[in-house]
Image 1: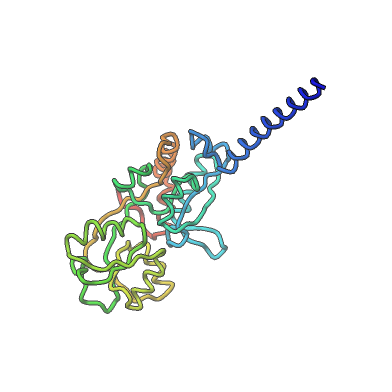
Image 2: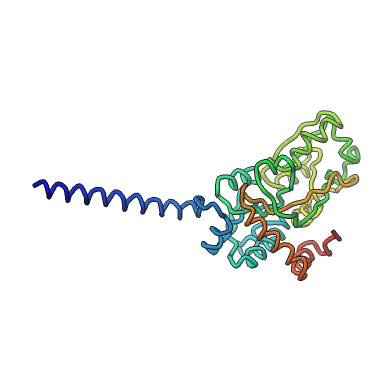
Length: 276
């Protein structure tokens, strides 16, 4: 009797141990390797790099007619993944949720015009920049009262929620020109619709981003004044992954050296990239 009880106890313990091991392995798969200390190794082991994008920001990243994501950022991400011998998987998210999603392990990287800022450097790491965008004030075509951001005082200005442009309006511009109202949006199209309809007085953005949207929707808007600032966008990576950053930097450098970057740039913007 004692021997039988001992055997039953042993079997019960063995089952618990095996179950625990099985759950641990399953959790690792579900988390897509969140338990890894080396995210580059995790990506290579899975053969896939999950890329966070807005998915509504043409010509950088947007849904094409074939229901697949396309754009400048998408081509850059695919090329980086190719040079790391993996595939790129794209997951769309409102811009305000991209960085939190990266920190929580929802994405391996962000390739969605994430501007390098000192504040963001505290929360995430960046690759070398892969594009520089000049930002201008945008108003309705018949608006002659706003000639630059100096005329924003007392006006209503639209901007993307959680973007570097929103931070610029609140922290840099408003203290200089005086108070104005800020309306935030989840995508550029809605911002421009409100501008075209007169619900806001102006927005700020770069001309590359606006051109295809304006052409498609027939918005009557124009850029005014000199460039406000030049933003450098880079691939964003979760803190503490130097090997992954190094691999991305090498891919970007090689793309520029062998002419691939130039081809992608001309494809989407119709001109050669500016000299560095």
